[in-house]
Length: 193
Image 1 (cartoon, rainbow, N blue to C red):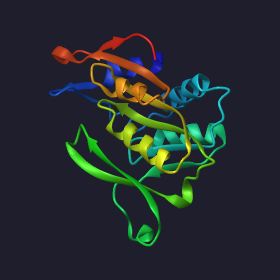
Image 2: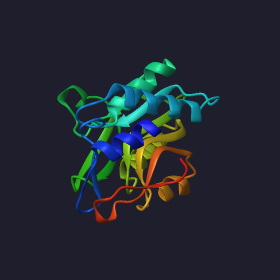
Image 3: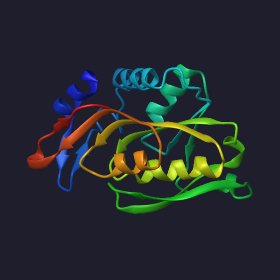
């Protein structure tokens, strides 16, 4: 956690509308040591729970998800924001997701071929704000009648309602770093995970 907090303070940039830009190390250019530390901590939190699959949404959740999946020795599948021609004739699970940062709606999908009722799923994402992506993925996992083991987040904006939405859905949540405020272009951290 210290590694991620330090990078946020050193390299993160706060923009209007509570946007935290961390693309120099997390979601555009990737610092593998930061991602590896996050992965280790998420894995430690969920230690002892059976996980058969990691699920995320493209694109920024892929980096932490693939590292976690590799360390756990399980497959990772990411929800696609558009249905490619290769999936046109396949059955899919889908859910509408609103992007807070981009202010756009997407219908994210996962092929039914890659998610079954036997799966025990850990959902991973880079950010948690209003919880749209996480709730959409929870919906998809529920459609598959699979089990949501929990949600793992790199950076949570605790001043928004995503955490409460996930907890209200009865899903366990671990956030590597929680941000209490981005007021006055200053990052203020919250306690806990």
